[in-house]
Length: 322
Image (cartoon, rainbow, N blue to C red; front, side, top):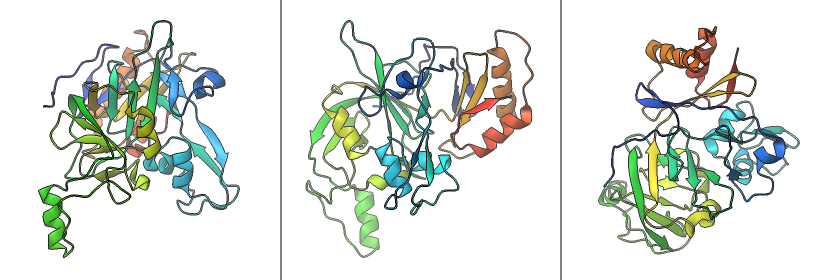
């Protein structure tokens, strides 16, 4: 069963509101190191002196592209690409339109072991075991999670089984809803193109929950499932055989992240928490207080209005603080 125990071994962390604030140093690595150009999709060497991997980039859309096509090709999900390009058409970006790829990530302030899933961020982080002499790394992938009334549960659990080409047994609630719509669901959906679990599934030690592929990849990066965690088919295929049974899975809701740059710069990043409550004055004051606290104890002027604006927008963009 899922455990509600939480561990924060990397840095001191305060719980704020119903989420957590991730604190850490900001690593401004060189473009080659940050982009992981010599690594497979989503793979990055762990930073030695910080918690930042990847980089923001831009691409030019072709006539045939949708924004979701571009997102999938560059390892980001629906909400990530939409929030990074609010003025770009989702379905017809247009030939030559510049599209921002939000490919820079602050690692969750959790133990760097197994799988860490930040539901607020709609993103999964995997820290594979490495052999002696190998560079420790992290792999990160966009995910889909549970929609309203079907929130993905939080806490520490583990993987219990891997299934290739699984059959899907619709739960009673889905079958009942389908019957009420006049479109009865089958008792079992065999492997194939109509199976919503796709080709690969990793069961979790929470009855009824799993990390799986999908036959509807456009839903990756959305809150659209009944609680399970969806990945692009190519992403879960790339990790499926490398995630041992029994791997720890830590599911968190960390909607606010803070970081510091190499030149004593401060940054803030905010997402919408899964309970979608607005950030109040208490949260604002706590965020500002933590920025000041982690400036080496030195007094620092913080623009309250700027921090408030970032929290109000909650669009996942990494913003430098004046």
